[in-house]
Image (cartoon, rainbow, N blue to C red; front, side):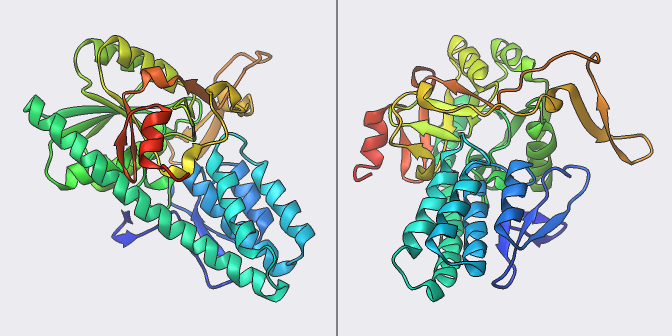
Length: 359
């Protein structure tokens, strides 16, 4: 994606001893990039959500592990660092997947070769993610074009959280079909859920769509069902942090409620994902660990003041407790279908195995 005329990926190498990311905690008010030089930097960036999104944190962790092996290529450091990075975000399966790829690439290789091999594997993970997301965009474009031809008017698409360029290395998952449809001249408008408590929709998805010139409107999380009842949502399109072998979906908290409303109003509900997000070792959503995040995210909010400065303010009574599950589970029965790099399929094991038979 281009920001101020310059193309950016969401993670990029800086020589062979550092890599860059965008500090997403500063968006949409400031565009700040960070230079990471160690696995500890990577772990902090993932845990603090300076970088986020299931595919992206896998790529960042891969580069972090490569840097750790540059400092100490031992088997013990490989295992310890991978465990530390894996523990930063327990729900997204891409994190463990990417770390395993790097570990497999260097295991049983001479120690003086490990850092270079790990760096090469991290770069390959990034390039493959871009290709997969571009393919997701093409398959999703076909779906959107078919729907637009049937409706014969501007399409209204509702999305939740951020599943765009900022959540991947480039293009995005759920937003990739939207970008390609916009570029193809298909008239569309996006309802952007604010996605409390971190407001990834209002802060990040709206930022991306605006930068790309896509018409959009930010709405409160609780408004989606209302617009579906009024016939003002033609398609729900979301990403995911983990999909089980049988098609249950773990995504940002609130996704389940959108899927319920979509089902009740006969609105198609599609989930876009690369194959790296499928957890073939889990059958049901109940198997997935749900990350419980800090109560401060619910009790406080950061924004720009009238004087232009950023400030964090308390929005709840002092002494009130808050719970903050980061994700919820949408059962496969509520999902119309999956959009993957290999095509669109039914949201069940048969559909997934049909696209990925050797997995």
